[in-house]
Image (cartoon, rainbow, N blue to C red):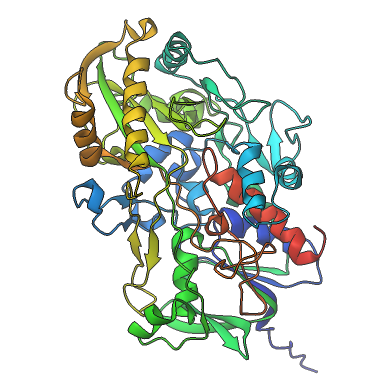
Length: 537
C-alpha cells in the first residue's frame, strides 16, 4: 500500500520578521519549546561571506551591497544638505554581522531613565540578568558579567601599537585607564572587548541561530522581504512576503514579532496600516490604527573624525592582505585578521555634561577612515571617532512609497535641537580629540593633519568642519518607542498599541539612546522579550 505524507503545515505559532540581532535571539529562545513552530523571515542572504566571519573583513564589507541595506538619509539641513550613508545589515545576523563588534552595554542610569519615562520593568536591576544571560565572557562570569552565555565576548587577539599609544595618550590627557567599559565604572580609555569567539566574529547568527538550526520546529527563510502584516479584526494573523519573485503568506497562531530595526520595523508597521493616519492616507494605505508615534523619535549618534598622517608604517592602511589572510586562515586565526579595526576607545565626560554619565565616546582606528572607509587616502594615518552620546535632536522614519520594495525616507534631523546644544557638544568632541592627539604618547607617530586640514581652528571653523564632515556611527534607535503613554508605539511588554498579537522587538523600542553602542542592548531586549512572550519575565 502506498503511504501518503500529510501536507506540510503552513501555519506557525510565531513569525519573526528580521533575522538581525534581536530576531536571531527570539528564533532561538522561542524554538527551545519543541511544541512551538517558529518561522524566521530575513530579506537578505545567509551569512556565508568569509569577510563576515574574519573580523578585519569588515573593512571589505563596506562595498558589499548584497549584505547591506545601503541606506541614505534625506538631505540634512544642518549638515550642508548632505545625504549621509547609513549601512545596516541585510543578512542573517543583521548589523551584528557587519559591525565593529565592540561589546558595550551603556550604564545603569540609561535603563533607570527608561523606566522613569514609562518603560516599566526595564530599569537596570531588571535588565542586568538578561545581559548576563546572553554573555559568555572569556574572562569569566561575575556579578556584572555572564560567563557561559551564547554571545562570546573576548579580549582582542591582536592590537596595533598605535592603539596602545592612543590609550596612553588618553591617560596623559587626564582620563582614567579602564580595562572594562562594562564593569563597575564606564568612564576612561582602554581597549574594547569584542563579540568574537576564537578569533572569529560571533554575530547573533553565530551565537543564537547556528545552535538552533537543527531544530525541526524552526524554519528559516532568507531572501524573504516582508510586505505587510496581515490583520484581521484588530489582530495580527500573519505576514505577506515576497520571495523568489512570488508573493507568499504565512499565518501566526500566536504572535507576529517585528525585529527589523529602527528603519524597517516602523516602515513595515506603516505599510500594514499602523502609523500616522495622514501619512498613510497620503500613500493610499488604509488606516488600521492611527499611531502618530510610529517612525517618530528617531535618534542616532553623530560622529566627527579627526585624522592625522602617521610617520611610521604600522597602520592598517597598507597592511599586506596576503599576510593577513595567511595568518588568519592558516595560522589558527592569528594576526591582524582578528582585529575589529576600532580596537581602542573610551568614554569621557565633558564640561557640558548635564549629569554623571559620560557624554563623549571614542573609537580609535589605526588607519585613515574617511567617509566610512569608502574614500581611500594615500599613505598611512590614524583616526579618532568622537560622538556625542545623548543628542537632543529628533528625526523620523517616513514612507517614500507604498511599495514595500522601496526604501523608507530617513530624516535624521541631526543638530536640530532648539538650544543648539548638540552642535556645541560636537565642537567639544572635536576639541577633546585634538587634545588627545597632542599628547606625548603619540609623538613618535604624529604626522601632518588630514582632517581638519590644520591645527588651531577656532570654534567657528570647527562648526564648519563638523557640518562638512560629521557622519553616523551606526546607532539609530527609538522609532517604535516603548512607554505607558498614549504616544508610545509599544507598551512595556513590547506589544503594539491598538493591535493584538503584534510586538516590536529591536532597537526601535528604545525610548532614548544608551551611553554607548547599541548591539549588546538590542540582544538584551530580545532576551527579555522572549521571557515576556513566554510569560517568564
